[in-house]
Figure 1 (spheres, protein in one colour):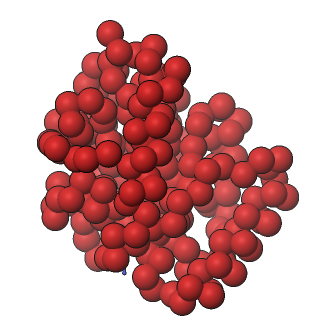
Figure 2 (tube, helix red, strand yellow):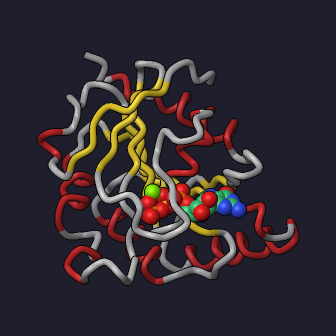
Length: 205
Ligand code: GTP
Ligand code: MG
């Protein structure tokens, strides 16, 4: 898919104030600092469409971007950041929970996971919650440039085996690096395919 336009639409914490759910939507979520905002910029060829930071906790709101006037990309706050108060930390409370559960045009949630680290309970629990609520998700591993190819393969195989202890089937998996631009074509192609799926077609009002 060629990205012709990518524009910021609105930021908020209130699902009723999100744009009309009439076109397909894809949300990016994961632990604080995992690289959600950077991946959004990489996919859209923009340096600072989504705000990034080396210190965790940068993204605090639900941020909608419209791509090619056809679909929404959503940058969400990270979970698991210790400096954020406990009440703000639980992703399955508050506005993120209602966003994920109620946003009817949400075609796929990309769960971002730092490929360098071993499976973390917080990510596994987050994905278990998605599954329990029948919310479609895929995994995008991030920061692939930071480890060797060999270590990358080991870590991904390890992650898959870990998941198979809890899930019968694995989700679709992407490997990305915002620095090296890896994973861009694969993720955009996947979104393009989903935009043409039955779930997305039902939305185009
Ligand atoms: P929050 O909004 O705070 O939850 O963080 P985020 O998940 O949006 O992360 P963000 O994109 O702001 O990136 C966090 C840090 O990781 C920044 O310093 C980025 O430059 C760095 N980073 C993100 N992606 C990559 C990557 O693929 N490779 C490398 N080497 N660094 C990355
Ligand atoms: Mg961010």
